[in-house]
Length: 308
Image (cartoon, rainbow, N blue to C red; front, side, top):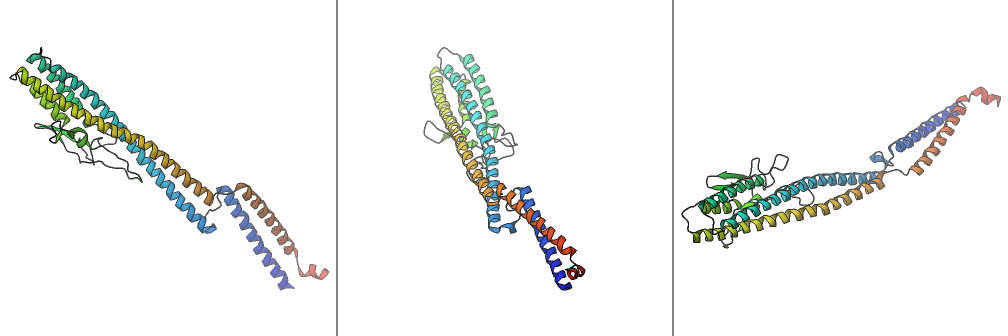
């Protein structure tokens, strides 16, 4: 009989411990709001949740890359807009230079004004991106990409564009060489530089030895070059604007992807609170019953048995 009582006592202890563990487990799930708290709870669901979390992290990284790209494209679009306005001013000055009543002094004044516009354009071309780089640095440079030398403005950036680490191609710079030095030459023989176009017309306007016919020819050639670089700047600006429109579409796709991953993670590991509360209540009742059983077994003794 002692063995039987001992066995009953051990069984009730084990049962009580098991019920207590069940209650704590249910309580932990309720507190966490998760059906899968650790991988052993449901390995398949845990793996689904882990993949979904990785997708969410990737979406967040893509969003950061998109915001960086959008910032640069906004700066590029703004800078090219400024360049377009300056070139329009330059064009109007060149048109004035063709006035047959202008003398050398008048043309020298226009040349000085064009030189000032050129200086402003150089500043726009070397505009920073706000993070230590340059909007028109191409594939990257830690110094201003355009340098004014005795022989004219040269490009020291790296041709092409740098891109953000993202699932979709997102530029972090604009090819400055193409934007500022890559206009199609009106003569069809190569390209013309924004700065060289202005340098050429300034030199002609300051040359007091030219005849009226030569001045007229210089103005005509100068207008053709300025129009060429204006068209090129406009084309690059349109591309930046198109990229800005594209970022809105990319942002929408990133948001959809993140939402899908969040939903998948929730489906894999989140708790049905109504069911969880019911389970907790049942397990609490089971624990109470086990506690009563243990109490009864604890009072058992050989004397109680004999008196029975």
